[in-house]
Length: 253
Image (cartoon, rainbow, N blue to C red; front, side, top):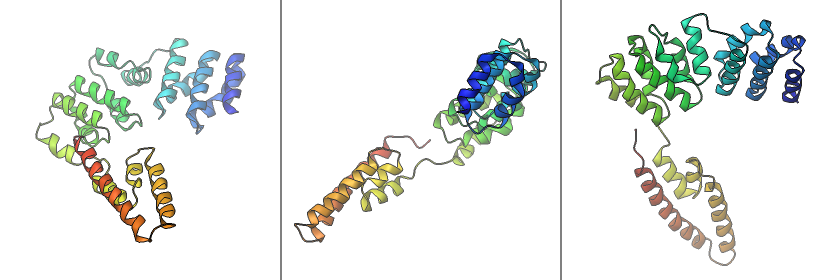
């Protein structure tokens, strides 16, 4: 409902709606509402909304930041300082334009290393490497410990340009957040076949678990109670072997 109201206010192009939209832009829990607020404020074009829009360039959601950047650009806003320029270009997804000048501040890029989207983190790491700024050394550990293998690889490629010793990279990677534990998946698949696959994020894992339970119950009506479980564990053993070979296909780093 809030989303529809925000769209209507934007279509009215009424500056009196700005005091209503700004709190939603800065504090609404829905990223869709904040995104719509940014677009609506851009359509209204009132200068009193500019400080709130500039602050929203640091919103945690990339869609909101993109909407804010478009709104500011539509109304002729030009960043007044180098840091504001980096915030704006990152929000507008114009990463290739960031290294254009000398003395680029790295603080906004380091901030984006904690973004929820691995694509944003990867771009931030790439630009930090292109800037050759020793100040980015403090971000090395953070990027090397990233949960995304793409971000970690980008960090390995980028940070030697920041005068970070190559010997630091293996130690930094060793402190990364580990992926799913293969032994946990195998144990789950042996005792509760299918739940190990669910642990790995496969949608059909719980369905397999339900099929197994149903089969045990049906077989228990016709055979001694131990027969269904023996059959179930025999199938589970195959699932354990499959889980092991499934993990071996993927590199640890």
